[in-house]
Image 1: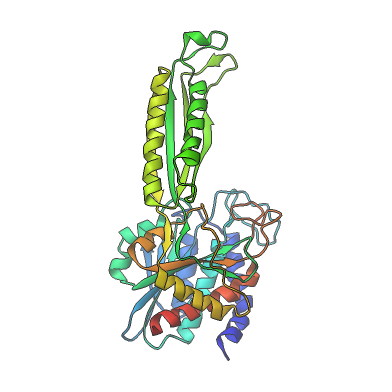
Image 2: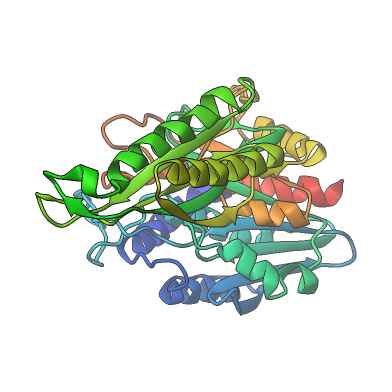
Length: 387
Protein backbone atom coordinates (compact mmCIF):
# COMPACT_ATOMS: atom_id res chain seq x y z
CA UNK A 1 0.00 0.00 0.00
CA UNK A 2 1.55 3.33 -1.06
CA UNK A 3 1.37 6.65 0.82
CA UNK A 4 -1.75 7.91 -0.97
CA UNK A 5 -3.66 4.71 -0.23
CA UNK A 6 -2.57 4.76 3.43
CA UNK A 7 -3.70 8.37 3.80
CA UNK A 8 -7.05 7.73 2.13
CA UNK A 9 -7.63 4.86 4.52
CA UNK A 10 -6.87 7.22 7.43
CA UNK A 11 -9.23 9.95 6.22
CA UNK A 12 -12.32 9.10 8.33
CA UNK A 13 -10.13 9.17 11.45
CA UNK A 14 -8.43 12.42 10.39
CA UNK A 15 -11.77 14.11 9.74
CA UNK A 16 -12.92 12.98 13.18
CA UNK A 17 -9.82 14.48 14.81
CA UNK A 18 -10.20 17.73 12.91
CA UNK A 19 -13.85 18.14 13.79
CA UNK A 20 -13.16 17.33 17.45
CA UNK A 21 -10.55 20.11 17.49
CA UNK A 22 -12.94 22.45 15.70
CA UNK A 23 -15.61 21.87 18.34
CA UNK A 24 -13.15 22.54 21.18
CA UNK A 25 -11.17 25.67 20.18
CA UNK A 26 -8.78 27.42 22.56
CA UNK A 27 -7.26 30.89 22.43
CA UNK A 28 -3.57 31.79 22.48
CA UNK A 29 -1.58 30.15 25.29
CA UNK A 30 -4.76 28.45 26.55
CA UNK A 31 -4.43 25.38 24.28
CA UNK A 32 -4.22 22.90 27.15
CA UNK A 33 -6.85 20.47 25.85
CA UNK A 34 -5.51 20.75 22.31
CA UNK A 35 -1.93 20.16 23.48
CA UNK A 36 -3.01 17.14 25.53
CA UNK A 37 -4.87 15.73 22.50
CA UNK A 38 -1.78 16.20 20.31
CA UNK A 39 0.59 14.70 22.89
CA UNK A 40 -1.65 11.65 23.36
CA UNK A 41 -1.76 10.98 19.62
CA UNK A 42 2.01 11.40 19.21
CA UNK A 43 2.71 8.97 22.04
CA UNK A 44 0.30 6.54 20.44
CA UNK A 45 2.43 6.69 17.28
CA UNK A 46 5.47 5.73 19.38
CA UNK A 47 7.14 9.15 19.20
CA UNK A 48 9.20 10.93 21.83
CA UNK A 49 7.03 13.79 23.16
CA UNK A 50 8.01 17.09 24.83
CA UNK A 51 5.29 19.31 26.29
CA UNK A 52 5.11 22.83 27.70
CA UNK A 53 7.56 24.45 25.27
CA UNK A 54 6.39 28.02 24.84
CA UNK A 55 3.87 27.41 27.65
CA UNK A 56 1.50 25.13 25.71
CA UNK A 57 3.60 24.01 22.74
CA UNK A 58 4.25 20.35 21.94
CA UNK A 59 7.13 18.76 20.03
CA UNK A 60 7.08 15.19 18.78
CA UNK A 61 10.41 13.64 17.80
CA UNK A 62 10.91 10.79 15.34
CA UNK A 63 14.53 9.61 15.44
CA UNK A 64 15.91 7.19 12.89
CA UNK A 65 19.68 7.01 13.24
CA UNK A 66 22.29 9.57 12.28
CA UNK A 67 21.52 12.35 9.87
CA UNK A 68 20.11 15.86 9.74
CA UNK A 69 17.07 17.14 11.62
CA UNK A 70 14.09 18.79 9.91
CA UNK A 71 11.24 20.66 11.61
CA UNK A 72 7.61 20.61 10.45
CA UNK A 73 5.33 23.12 12.17
CA UNK A 74 1.57 23.50 12.67
CA UNK A 75 -0.31 26.12 14.71
CA UNK A 76 -2.98 25.18 17.28
CA UNK A 77 -4.80 28.29 18.53
CA UNK A 78 -8.24 29.67 17.65
CA UNK A 79 -9.72 33.19 17.45
CA UNK A 80 -12.13 35.23 19.61
CA UNK A 81 -14.97 35.04 17.06
CA UNK A 82 -18.55 33.82 17.50
CA UNK A 83 -19.03 30.99 15.01
CA UNK A 84 -21.77 31.28 12.38
CA UNK A 85 -21.12 28.19 10.23
CA UNK A 86 -24.09 26.14 11.41
CA UNK A 87 -22.11 22.88 11.10
CA UNK A 88 -22.86 19.99 13.43
CA UNK A 89 -19.35 20.17 14.91
CA UNK A 90 -19.43 23.94 15.52
CA UNK A 91 -17.56 25.43 18.46
CA UNK A 92 -18.86 24.51 21.89
CA UNK A 93 -17.11 27.54 23.42
CA UNK A 94 -19.03 30.80 23.19
CA UNK A 95 -17.14 33.49 21.31
CA UNK A 96 -14.23 31.25 20.30
CA UNK A 97 -13.79 29.42 17.00
CA UNK A 98 -11.26 27.97 14.59
CA UNK A 99 -11.69 30.65 11.92
CA UNK A 100 -8.25 30.24 10.34
CA UNK A 101 -7.90 26.50 9.85
CA UNK A 102 -5.45 25.73 12.65
CA UNK A 103 -7.62 22.72 13.50
CA UNK A 104 -6.87 21.42 9.99
CA UNK A 105 -3.19 22.31 10.19
CA UNK A 106 -2.83 20.41 13.48
CA UNK A 107 -4.66 17.40 12.07
CA UNK A 108 -2.59 17.26 8.87
CA UNK A 109 0.66 17.30 10.85
CA UNK A 110 -0.67 14.61 13.20
CA UNK A 111 -1.54 12.53 10.13
CA UNK A 112 1.98 13.03 8.81
CA UNK A 113 3.46 12.03 12.17
CA UNK A 114 1.50 8.80 12.08
CA UNK A 115 2.50 8.09 8.48
CA UNK A 116 6.17 8.82 9.08
CA UNK A 117 6.21 6.65 12.19
CA UNK A 118 5.09 3.80 9.92
CA UNK A 119 7.33 4.65 6.94
CA UNK A 120 10.22 6.75 8.33
CA UNK A 121 13.01 8.34 6.29
CA UNK A 122 16.15 6.25 5.87
CA UNK A 123 18.02 8.38 8.40
CA UNK A 124 17.81 11.56 10.43
CA UNK A 125 15.24 13.13 12.75
CA UNK A 126 11.84 14.69 12.13
CA UNK A 127 10.48 17.29 14.56
CA UNK A 128 6.71 17.75 14.65
CA UNK A 129 6.29 21.24 16.11
CA UNK A 130 2.80 22.09 17.38
CA UNK A 131 2.90 25.78 18.15
CA UNK A 132 0.54 27.81 20.35
CA UNK A 133 -0.51 31.43 20.03
CA UNK A 134 0.07 32.22 16.38
CA UNK A 135 -2.82 34.69 16.29
CA UNK A 136 -1.00 37.86 17.34
CA UNK A 137 0.63 36.59 20.53
CA UNK A 138 3.97 35.26 19.26
CA UNK A 139 3.86 31.63 20.30
CA UNK A 140 6.63 30.82 17.82
CA UNK A 141 8.92 33.31 19.52
CA UNK A 142 7.97 31.89 22.92
CA UNK A 143 8.95 28.37 21.82
CA UNK A 144 12.31 29.63 20.55
CA UNK A 145 12.98 31.55 23.78
CA UNK A 146 12.23 28.40 25.77
CA UNK A 147 14.85 26.40 23.88
CA UNK A 148 13.13 24.92 20.82
CA UNK A 149 16.15 25.10 18.53
CA UNK A 150 18.68 24.83 21.35
CA UNK A 151 17.28 21.46 22.35
CA UNK A 152 16.30 20.42 18.83
CA UNK A 153 18.89 21.89 16.42
CA UNK A 154 16.98 21.51 13.17
CA UNK A 155 18.84 22.16 9.94
CA UNK A 156 15.66 23.61 8.38
CA UNK A 157 12.04 24.26 9.28
CA UNK A 158 8.82 24.34 7.24
CA UNK A 159 5.29 25.66 7.64
CA UNK A 160 2.02 25.34 5.71
CA UNK A 161 -1.23 27.33 5.71
CA UNK A 162 -4.50 26.62 3.95
CA UNK A 163 -5.34 29.47 1.56
CA UNK A 164 -8.89 30.34 0.44
CA UNK A 165 -8.94 31.91 -3.01
CA UNK A 166 -6.32 29.51 -4.39
CA UNK A 167 -7.89 26.51 -6.19
CA UNK A 168 -8.50 23.49 -4.00
CA UNK A 169 -5.36 21.35 -3.73
CA UNK A 170 -3.07 23.76 -5.58
CA UNK A 171 0.12 24.91 -3.86
CA UNK A 172 1.69 28.38 -3.89
CA UNK A 173 5.39 28.73 -3.07
CA UNK A 174 7.31 31.99 -2.74
CA UNK A 175 11.04 32.64 -2.77
CA UNK A 176 11.76 35.55 -0.44
CA UNK A 177 8.97 37.42 1.37
CA UNK A 178 5.67 35.57 1.66
CA UNK A 179 3.94 37.33 4.60
CA UNK A 180 4.36 40.89 5.89
CA UNK A 181 5.89 42.22 9.08
CA UNK A 182 3.28 43.32 11.61
CA UNK A 183 3.53 46.24 14.06
CA UNK A 184 0.94 48.00 16.19
CA UNK A 185 0.76 51.64 17.25
CA UNK A 186 -1.17 53.83 19.65
CA UNK A 187 -1.14 57.61 19.46
CA UNK A 188 -2.85 59.78 22.09
CA UNK A 189 -3.46 63.30 20.77
CA UNK A 190 -3.73 65.54 23.84
CA UNK A 191 -5.54 68.80 23.18
CA UNK A 192 -7.79 70.90 25.38
CA UNK A 193 -11.48 70.27 25.79
CA UNK A 194 -14.11 72.91 25.27
CA UNK A 195 -17.79 73.49 24.63
CA UNK A 196 -18.92 72.23 21.24
CA UNK A 197 -20.30 75.67 20.47
CA UNK A 198 -17.06 77.42 21.47
CA UNK A 199 -14.22 75.48 19.78
CA UNK A 200 -11.98 78.56 19.81
CA UNK A 201 -11.63 78.18 23.57
CA UNK A 202 -9.94 74.80 23.28
CA UNK A 203 -7.57 72.73 21.14
CA UNK A 204 -9.63 70.21 19.20
CA UNK A 205 -7.86 66.81 19.18
CA UNK A 206 -10.43 65.35 16.79
CA UNK A 207 -9.64 67.88 14.07
CA UNK A 208 -5.93 67.33 14.66
CA UNK A 209 -6.40 63.55 14.42
CA UNK A 210 -8.01 63.98 11.00
CA UNK A 211 -4.92 65.88 9.83
CA UNK A 212 -2.70 63.17 11.29
CA UNK A 213 -4.59 60.37 9.55
CA UNK A 214 -4.16 62.03 6.16
CA UNK A 215 -0.46 62.68 6.80
CA UNK A 216 0.14 59.02 7.66
CA UNK A 217 -1.54 57.79 4.49
CA UNK A 218 0.74 60.07 2.48
CA UNK A 219 3.71 58.10 3.85
CA UNK A 220 2.54 55.04 1.90
CA UNK A 221 1.62 56.90 -1.27
CA UNK A 222 4.55 59.34 -1.35
CA UNK A 223 7.43 57.99 0.78
CA UNK A 224 7.29 54.25 0.02
CA UNK A 225 8.75 53.11 -3.29
CA UNK A 226 5.81 52.28 -5.60
CA UNK A 227 7.34 48.84 -6.27
CA UNK A 228 7.43 48.12 -2.53
CA UNK A 229 4.37 47.35 -0.40
CA UNK A 230 3.14 48.80 2.87
CA UNK A 231 -0.19 49.30 4.66
CA UNK A 232 -0.99 51.72 7.49
CA UNK A 233 -4.43 51.02 8.93
CA UNK A 234 -6.03 53.06 11.70
CA UNK A 235 -8.44 50.54 13.16
CA UNK A 236 -9.60 52.32 16.34
CA UNK A 237 -10.49 55.93 17.19
CA UNK A 238 -11.70 56.67 20.73
CA UNK A 239 -12.79 60.09 21.93
CA UNK A 240 -15.53 61.93 23.74
CA UNK A 241 -18.61 61.10 25.79
CA UNK A 242 -21.05 63.91 25.12
CA UNK A 243 -22.78 65.50 22.13
CA UNK A 244 -21.71 69.03 22.97
CA UNK A 245 -18.23 68.62 24.41
CA UNK A 246 -14.97 68.65 22.44
CA UNK A 247 -12.82 66.12 24.35
CA UNK A 248 -9.39 66.66 25.84
CA UNK A 249 -7.83 63.76 23.94
CA UNK A 250 -8.23 61.28 21.10
CA UNK A 251 -6.67 57.81 20.98
CA UNK A 252 -5.82 56.28 17.61
CA UNK A 253 -4.71 52.67 17.28
CA UNK A 254 -3.86 50.49 14.33
CA UNK A 255 -1.38 48.36 12.46
CA UNK A 256 1.48 48.74 10.01
CA UNK A 257 2.39 45.99 7.52
CA UNK A 258 5.61 45.97 5.51
CA UNK A 259 7.75 43.57 3.46
CA UNK A 260 11.20 45.18 3.87
CA UNK A 261 13.04 46.04 7.14
CA UNK A 262 14.11 49.41 5.71
CA UNK A 263 10.51 50.32 4.89
CA UNK A 264 9.39 49.17 8.31
CA UNK A 265 11.88 51.45 10.07
CA UNK A 266 11.19 54.41 7.77
CA UNK A 267 7.44 54.24 8.39
CA UNK A 268 7.92 54.06 12.14
CA UNK A 269 10.17 57.12 12.06
CA UNK A 270 7.88 59.16 9.82
CA UNK A 271 4.73 58.27 11.75
CA UNK A 272 6.40 59.44 14.95
CA UNK A 273 7.71 62.64 13.36
CA UNK A 274 4.43 63.57 11.73
CA UNK A 275 2.49 62.94 14.91
CA UNK A 276 4.86 65.19 16.84
CA UNK A 277 5.04 67.98 14.23
CA UNK A 278 1.33 68.14 13.44
CA UNK A 279 0.28 68.10 17.08
CA UNK A 280 2.78 70.80 18.01
CA UNK A 281 1.68 72.94 15.05
CA UNK A 282 -1.84 73.06 16.51
CA UNK A 283 -0.77 73.44 20.14
CA UNK A 284 -1.40 69.82 21.09
CA UNK A 285 0.88 66.97 22.17
CA UNK A 286 1.31 63.43 20.84
CA UNK A 287 2.11 60.39 22.97
CA UNK A 288 3.21 57.56 20.67
CA UNK A 289 3.53 53.89 21.63
CA UNK A 290 4.89 51.45 19.04
CA UNK A 291 5.04 47.65 19.33
CA UNK A 292 7.08 45.56 16.90
CA UNK A 293 5.07 42.34 16.72
CA UNK A 294 6.04 39.93 13.90
CA UNK A 295 8.90 40.23 11.41
CA UNK A 296 8.41 39.55 7.71
CA UNK A 297 8.10 35.85 6.83
CA UNK A 298 10.92 35.18 4.37
CA UNK A 299 11.52 31.87 2.58
CA UNK A 300 15.11 30.92 1.78
CA UNK A 301 15.78 29.99 -1.84
CA UNK A 302 17.02 26.41 -1.44
CA UNK A 303 14.23 25.44 0.96
CA UNK A 304 11.57 27.14 -1.19
CA UNK A 305 12.78 25.09 -4.14
CA UNK A 306 12.62 21.92 -2.03
CA UNK A 307 9.06 22.81 -1.07
CA UNK A 308 8.18 23.51 -4.72
CA UNK A 309 9.55 20.17 -5.90
CA UNK A 310 7.65 18.38 -3.13
CA UNK A 311 4.43 20.22 -3.97
CA UNK A 312 4.83 19.32 -7.64
CA UNK A 313 5.25 15.65 -6.72
CA UNK A 314 2.34 15.76 -4.28
CA UNK A 315 -0.17 17.37 -6.63
CA UNK A 316 0.75 16.23 -10.14
CA UNK A 317 -1.23 17.93 -12.85
CA UNK A 318 -1.67 21.09 -10.78
CA UNK A 319 0.87 23.80 -11.49
CA UNK A 320 2.58 25.09 -8.37
CA UNK A 321 1.99 28.84 -8.26
CA UNK A 322 5.27 30.71 -7.87
CA UNK A 323 4.23 34.20 -8.98
CA UNK A 324 1.59 35.18 -6.43
CA UNK A 325 2.17 38.45 -4.59
CA UNK A 326 3.07 38.12 -0.91
CA UNK A 327 0.21 38.59 1.53
CA UNK A 328 0.17 41.68 3.74
CA UNK A 329 -1.20 39.50 6.54
CA UNK A 330 1.39 38.28 9.04
CA UNK A 331 2.59 35.00 10.50
CA UNK A 332 4.76 34.31 13.51
CA UNK A 333 6.44 31.40 11.74
CA UNK A 334 8.63 34.36 10.73
CA UNK A 335 10.47 34.02 14.04
CA UNK A 336 11.44 30.45 13.19
CA UNK A 337 12.63 31.52 9.74
CA UNK A 338 14.83 34.16 11.38
CA UNK A 339 16.56 31.31 13.23
CA UNK A 340 16.61 28.61 10.55
CA UNK A 341 16.42 28.34 6.76
CA UNK A 342 13.04 27.13 5.61
CA UNK A 343 9.86 27.76 3.66
CA UNK A 344 6.22 28.56 4.37
CA UNK A 345 3.76 27.49 1.67
CA UNK A 346 0.08 27.99 0.91
CA UNK A 347 -2.23 25.07 0.14
CA UNK A 348 -5.30 26.20 -1.80
CA UNK A 349 -8.61 25.45 -0.11
CA UNK A 350 -10.89 26.68 -2.89
CA UNK A 351 -13.34 29.56 -3.16
CA UNK A 352 -13.26 32.36 -0.59
CA UNK A 353 -16.75 33.60 -1.46
CA UNK A 354 -19.76 33.68 0.89
CA UNK A 355 -17.70 34.03 4.04
CA UNK A 356 -15.20 31.28 3.35
CA UNK A 357 -12.28 33.66 3.86
CA UNK A 358 -9.87 33.41 6.78
CA UNK A 359 -10.98 35.01 10.07
CA UNK A 360 -14.64 34.96 9.03
CA UNK A 361 -17.37 33.72 11.39
CA UNK A 362 -18.57 31.55 8.48
CA UNK A 363 -15.20 29.98 7.66
CA UNK A 364 -14.60 26.24 8.01
CA UNK A 365 -11.51 24.28 7.02
CA UNK A 366 -11.92 22.31 3.80
CA UNK A 367 -11.42 18.64 4.71
CA UNK A 368 -10.90 17.76 1.03
CA UNK A 369 -7.35 19.17 1.15
CA UNK A 370 -6.36 17.15 4.21
CA UNK A 371 -4.87 14.15 2.35
CA UNK A 372 -2.85 16.50 0.13
CA UNK A 373 -1.42 18.29 3.15
CA UNK A 374 -0.52 15.02 4.89
CA UNK A 375 1.18 13.65 1.79
CA UNK A 376 3.09 16.91 1.30
CA UNK A 377 4.51 16.72 4.83
CA UNK A 378 5.50 13.07 4.41
CA UNK A 379 7.23 13.64 1.07
CA UNK A 380 8.90 16.83 2.30
CA UNK A 381 10.40 15.08 5.33
CA UNK A 382 11.81 12.31 3.12
CA UNK A 383 13.16 14.82 0.58
CA UNK A 384 14.75 17.07 3.21
CA UNK A 385 16.46 14.23 5.07
CA UNK A 386 17.52 12.29 1.99
CA UNK A 387 19.14 15.42 0.54
